[in-house]
Each structure stands twice: as C-alpha cells, then as structure tokens.
Amino acid sequence: MYDDVITMCWSIREVNRNLQDRESMTDYSIEYLKKACRDLSEMIASGKAADLEEEVEVVNRSGKAAEFKMAEVAEMLTDTKKIIEFNLIDIVDRWARLKVEGSRDR
Image: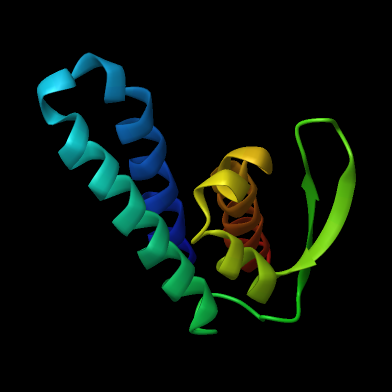
C-alpha cells in the first residue's frame, strides 16, 4: 500500500510541475490534482496504509513544526490551502518511503 501512496504523490507532483506547460489542459489538470489528493486522503483515512493515530512532523512555510496524526493529515489533504501551506504531498511521500524502507529492514 505504501508503494501506491508513493506513486500517487509522484503523480501529483508531476502534474503540478507541468501545469504551466499545458495551458489547454489546465482545467483537466486542476481537476486531476483535486481528485488525486482526495483519493490519497481516502487511501490514508481508510487505515489500510496507515495507523491513523501515528504522528508525523509537519512544517509550515514559516518554519514552525507541529505533530499531526495521520488521520488529521488525511483530512488536510482535502484542503488545497493546507496542502500548499504544509507541503503535504512531500510529507506523505517521505512518510511512505520511510515505511517501505522500514519493512525492508525487517
């Protein structure tokens, strides 16, 4: 499941990065990003990819760090402003990669 989260994060970043390159597809790209973030939220919130009580450190743009439970992170993934403010896609990607690396070490 963590590999699915990593793939989803990669896809979101790629579409976002290329958004300006494809003006004719901007509306489609924005809708894709919204849906992908909702899907990622649902994937995490289902509890299949995460212990919803697990906490991760999230740093906002001003550099202030806070701990949020994965259930809270999943909810924040439905809010565009929070996704940007907390750089949530990178946070979730890093979290999933650590989980994959941890499972390989066992």
